[in-house]
Length: 506
Image 1 (cartoon, rainbow, N blue to C red):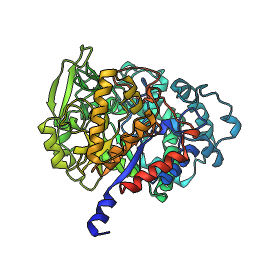
Image 2 (image 1 turned 120 degrees about the vertical axis):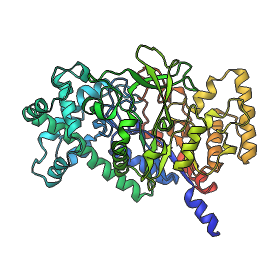
Image 3 (image 1 turned 90 degrees about the vertical axis):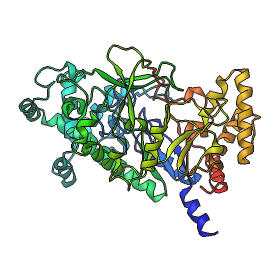
Image 4 (image 1 turned 90 degrees about the horizontal axis):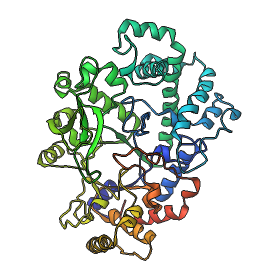
């Protein structure tokens, strides 16, 4: 094997998208315990080098990890009780009989919200408060704002901070100091959730590294309107008035995901103000993300070039305007980091210029290629090395679900384009069953030039629409709630992936 081929193989990897929430576990949601370790073992057996997760942030209304109450806090739902028992912080009887959900395929977020903290508080009560690691964590103070915010949320029945009493609403310094003294135990508990999460996460990450698996994280570009940052740092970071009211809301215009666009409702950044200190908040946020992850995908990357805003009163994102973002200047000094730019949606030459300046790989999605456009950049035969190729993302239907949704005419067109791509890349075109078709599609992206390919777990298993993770612009108990079981981690699927990894030098 010559030198060039060796280097080329080193750059070619395959990954699997598996949200932590979707992992098998007995606790109603995926955790950082036994199910996560078993999944890493499965990835190792399959020769997979990258595990992509979705944001690890706490969720609130709508259960979306892209609408969090904090930019870098960690989702305490993912803390594993069995690991806490091993540390002597819980007794099995305190958690083993809890009814999390009768449907093992779905997360019941209502039960997570109602039951999780009470069990974790029992663990906190047994923590050695003189432990050196715990005291060092408290001195660092990274999650103190989050802990204070959550304690205030509890005081005001989890209402938005815009509905809190004065002077808490306006984060009056003296009032917050008094409140913190009176509620030190509760604030300590919320800091404990972050401390324990990090302890369990770092152990899992070390285990993954020992198995040759890197972890790819995911960073939303925006935070929620009801968040620590928009509450306490509204004057420094966002286009908000003195009261914190939003006049311009984030979103995207109509695209492949939604005919009416997506009206996210997040506050948008005041980039001019952030520029004055060299975008310090953003750079520190990215720096910290790389203490958690090996690779980082940044969502809605085009928003750094220009971002779409919708004025208050609009009910959809059809009517809005574009404003200028910070451009490549924000990423100066961050060249050492392996960042993936989510560049899907309305991409123009200005965004392409930003991508060239940063050098970050963008994304291509197989399911976007079957649109009748013979020159589509999403066709695997057109992929270049510096991209990350997906069969679909967390916002797409599953491969099987997509195929099943096509009417007869669309299905014929799909089969024709699919076969053409297989011929161009000399991969098998087998369509006798939907499972065959899904496997042919996965092999197609493996065969491409893309240095990194990522396949959602539901496409590896050829699951249908029931396994779709999210349908954008909808509120549904089916969004963000699908889960896999232990039985889904099939050895034959790992063996099949291993064959693809070896065949295509990944």
